[in-house]
Length: 123
Image 1: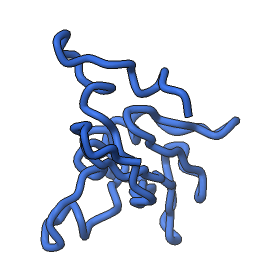
Image 2: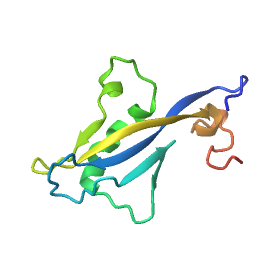
Image 3: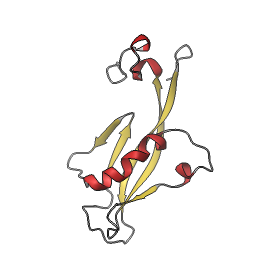
Image 4: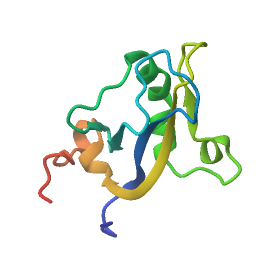
């Protein structure tokens, strides 16, 4: 929860799921497999696998998708990223879930503004 005296920002948690919608995959795409993005962490369920090429296509978009964007921005409205293999029907759908607040001090690398890293803070 946000503390009024502390500077910080909100990020969406994301779920990135494999969708085929009847298309034929070439790469390893299993409909329904997913991972989550929580802060800077990619969180995979046990035994979930993802093509590194498909992951490479979606990684550049995740940080932007975590942030609040204008309702008319394509980052808000568009959710699917195609596998980079032009013959593959696999897609990765990015779904915004709940929001999480991060303090600036827990996430900055600036020595004079650092606090306890967010991943070391007690829950």
